[in-house]
Every structure is written in structure tokens, then in C-alpha cells.
Length: 501
Image (cartoon, rainbow, N blue to C red; front, side, top):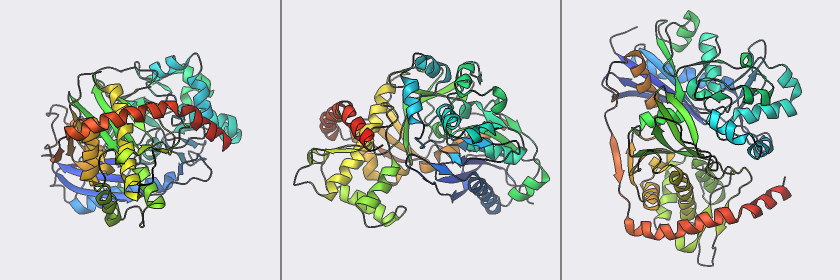
């Protein structure tokens, strides 16, 4: 195998696909690969995936990169989506699917826990919002509803730990993924007894925590042959996708927030210490020994665009021409959609509401509203939701004046302009929807060469969008109504939910 080319791979295990990116020593992207897999919903509120299919996607992504470049990488670093849960038995075999962040079956458990006297302490110690997304709530649900599975559980792991186990036959978890479980003391980097007691488990049933720059320096000949790499290739365990996106989108600097809109969405800032806000439950996830990523996730992002295809559009999700047509249509409508406001809570909502029973609402419908108004109101509603999170963070670690944006939203300049106008912030697109995988590649390069400068990526501002302040003034008025509707509609949303549950 040719070993002359020097490069690293970052690989992001996402909700809908696994994406791999290779960069050379100068930070230039030299190859990419992506492999998709399905999500199943066997019952209402369920969101499950086959871990074996994700492992196969991981393997294919690396094989594709190595084939393209023609030699083995120096290091492969893992990024991964958060909050997944897999139960494995004494044979190290999964006895559940991978239950994803979007699974809401434990919502009653989360709601009762949030109302308990110890809720704020659990949130503060673990840094994880108390929500059905968290493995803490998922494990309790399995204990109460799947006792036979619970009794067979050797380990409760994430999809990243599953991949790591396939590689090395050991159960290890990085501090970043651990800090998103609701089971981990983020100040002392140990499993938290109170949370484990709630689940009635012990630390032996969880993986061993390791730092995010933790390296394994050898791999079996069998796995090396499968991945088509050399046995001396190093692996860096890495961090979560949100943390890695901060690096990949070059948002790990003062005055910059990261906004990611993929299937769901999130707003994040870097901080040297946790930022606590119990009512809004700002998350605090570990990037490294010196950096906490603080922010809030939203349930409703690109998945609403998929919903638009099903409900309003002739075409299929992934059809680029149909996707562009949505935003060509949107451009014909003035800011504010002529009085139509959308509450984008089709999948419930996380930050800052933390309400699994929230639902979507179109408000202000009149006879002059057409399909184009509903499409624009939907895009605006998603951006209002992101601003709602941003307000919780702006000023906590200095004023935010720029949003570095990544994910599916970057495919539309119109949608980006709406985000700029609603937030009143400059938008910068740097490295687009590869941010998490790119961040992982950069992080791995730093792990094996710690004395090098942090700025491994050449800044690639593919697009800079300034807010139209005239439009921003219009949106400020609509946004006030949006927030009032969000809070005042809660009781009715809950009544409707209870009538249909």
C-alpha cells in the first residue's frame, strides 16, 4: 500500500448517514464519502435504527476514502450523534435496536423527573437537559416496560460505543458523549451515583470514560483488512457531533455561535465553564479539558422540510430540483408571510421549552394565504425557534455577532437570508454540511500532533450573508407574537395531546 500521502480521516456517525472526510496536513479536503441508513418508527413516538447497518456504513465510508486516496490514514477520529441507547447482553450482542435522540417513549418519565425536587441538581451535575432524548430517561423506561430486556443487560451503550467495540472489543466512552447521557458528573468526569440509582444500574453496566483525545494505537489484522488500512493506524475516540461541528465550522472563537440545521437543529457557543439555566436547560457538553459547548437543541429542522414534501410539494425528499423550487416559491412572499406565523413543533420541542407535548400551529390564516405563504412561514418558524434558543446564550460568554452555519440549511441562500434577517446576525457558511466530520479530522490531527497550531483548517467562507435590517425590524414584531403564542398555547397543546394519546 502506498504510504507516501499523509492525511487523516474524520468520520461522523449521524442520524441519517455516516459521513467521512479526509484532510491532508495543510487542512485541505482531499476526499469525502457518505453512506445512508433508515430510521424505523414501529410505534408512535419510537425512533430506532439497526446498529449493524450503521457499522456497515462506517466500514464503507472508510473503505471509500482509503480507495480514493490510495493509502492508509495517520489517524481516524470519531464524531457521533448524541443520546442514542443500545442494550447489549452477556454475549455482547445488541438486544435492542439503537434508540435515537428523537425517540419520545420516555416522555412521561422525563416530565415527572423535571417536576421532582431533585431535578435541578441532576441537570446541574450532569449538564444534560432532562428530556426523553436522554439515556437516563430511556434506561428507566426500559426498566419499567421491558423487564426481560433490562434483566439481560450487560451494558447500556451508545451507537458510538457500539462502533468502538466492533473496532477494539472494549467498552469505552469519551467524556463528550458521556456528558450527554444524564448519567455523568461533568465536573469530575465520573458516572453520577444519583442518576445510576434512578436507573437501578451500576458503573459496571456503563463503559469506561476516557478523554476525548484518547488514542488507540493498534488494531487487529482482521479489522484492518476489513477497513483496508494498516494495523498501525491510530484511532482517536473524539467527541459528539455538536462539539465537533464547533471546530469544523470554525465557531470555537469569541463572538461566534454555531447554528446547525440537519434533521433537527442546535445553537451552540464555546465556554471555559458550564453555563446553567434550569428553566431553559442550556446543555453543557464536554469538548476537551478546557472547553464546554453550551447551547440548546431543537427537534424541528430539516425534518420539517421533509414534512413539506409529503404535505405540500410534488416531489420526494432529496430531490434537489424540488428542494430549490420550495425556496424559489418562498422568495415570492414578503417577510412575515403576510401575517402567517408557524409554531414549528411538529415533533414536540426541546430547547428552550422542553415540552414533548408541544405541537405545530399555523396562526393567522386568511383567505389570501396560498401554498407559498405556508412554505415561507415554515422556514421562518424554524428560524424563530433557533432565535428563541440563541436568546438564552447571547451575552453569557460575550456578545454573539456572527453565526457560523452548517447542515442542510446551507443548501439554500434564501433560507440563510431569512435566518440572518430574523436574528439580525451576520451569517457565515464555512465548510457547509461537512462540519462535524471535518471537526473530527482536525481534532484527530491535534491529538497526534499536540504542539501544532489549532488552526488546521483554511478558513473557507463560502458564503457571507449580512442581515437586512429593514426586514429585521419587521421580524422583531412577528417574533414577539411568536414567543407569546408559544407560551400561551401550551395548555391547549397539552389538552390536544392528551385527547389523542
